[in-house]
Image (cartoon, rainbow, N blue to C red; front, side, top):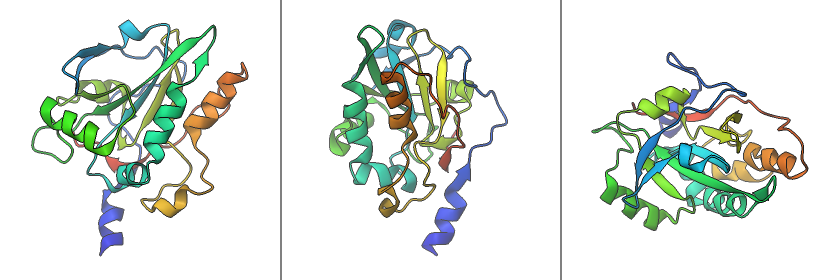
Length: 203
């Protein structure tokens, strides 16, 4: 039964709305964070930005957070400096609509951020789904990397293991880490687009 439920929850990304492709200008946004502050992509121009679509109730998200895989990756990536010491910022975005799994207000998001030990800069609240739909985010997690010029340089899955089983983390190819390893060497991202997997975003 558990496998059946996960199978119903699991989707490979396919979008009936806008989709951001690698090389496109990243859609700007201004969203309230769990910290009570408004965060804008425009204000982060000059930095690399990782966008992670987030739903704490999703089994695929739980795989990464209950194992601390995501928190450790957030810390690791944000410690990097690229292209003349350009910093890296990581946002976790909740696009769950009111009444649906994963929906949070500021208070609930702040509690979740603390309890789960997130290391992203902020959980951003996109309850009307406008930002998620502008990017074509279909799953949690669904990952995007935006470079210092505001262009999307990676879009897709976090790794190559479309499973909710944390045992699959061992030996997984983490596409976010791989992308930043390329960037640290001064190269373009070799694997720049993959098929996202996880639970559907609860628009």
